[in-house]
Length: 425
Image 1 (cartoon, rainbow, N blue to C red):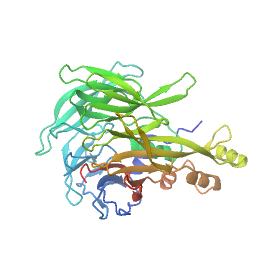
Image 2: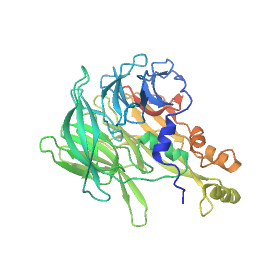
Image 3: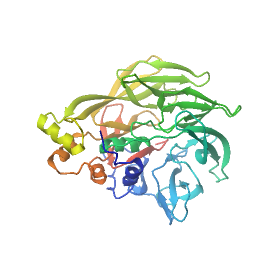
Image 4: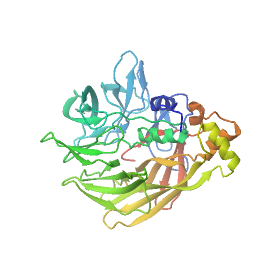
């Protein structure tokens, strides 16, 4: 078994400290995004150099949620006030050359930001109130609403119970990179928070698998699916897509793509060519397309028996050890006809984030590199497998742009973590 030495908080902290600045956009792609690098928010303009956001004195950026406002004129992130012992603040920025301003305190960083139809920010806040729930229990989470232009006063609009008690660890840096991209624990799903015409869609526990709908009118919270994770809500708020994960008694997992009609909570399983991992919607007008990834193990490393034993000893495993070498395929699916076509394939540990440009001309996605580079360094003694900082330094996230018209791919930069694409390019 793995030694439990790498805890998530430690590694997320390392992602925000001392890393290399990202490269300028390459290959003619002019995609504007926000991403974490070192301890700053980084913004990329159309073909321009990436520039750090300006943070007020006394604040430090956290690895919490980041988003653009719906019109793309501002972006939001979270930061700690180093002079207070308190939860992070929501920070609002007009661009890298304008100092960001704190607009609300006590934000909970596990959940993403969301917006109402009229553009108010929606975010979560911890209460510290523990309640009886399945498993180790749950915490009452408040849902807050805040006008941004002009900045108003946070307003409580609902509450729900969120199951706690998650954990996990290991010493594979690619796994931690993926967990960081998903802002989840090892093996966990990204959280969902989305405002729809039917209420707030939200994750039900810290593992991210399990989704519910909070109804504003009745203040009831209805579980939609206890096994559904990797959830994305359609741009019109009428449907959600997600990955249902079911474990058999022998521990074998099956994953299936599920659509849920939020007006009646009826779910439909969509056919896929493999087990889906990451799901997202096209936001283009009248589009009926979903995009998702499928990860397939295509090889094991190392192949040599003597090297497998050395790998086992280095990682403190009981048996000769190999690492998976994966191929990731991105698929486009028409949810009406269920026609599914591959649009890109890459050798990688995984794709962390998958974005569709607003006109559906291309995709932007983060690539977690394959394990063979790190594995070779472990075998040759070039790296200590228990040195988390060294492991992460050779496992940097790359941000790629795929042109859907001709299939060309360009590198937007390296070491760009938790990217968010500007809604209107």
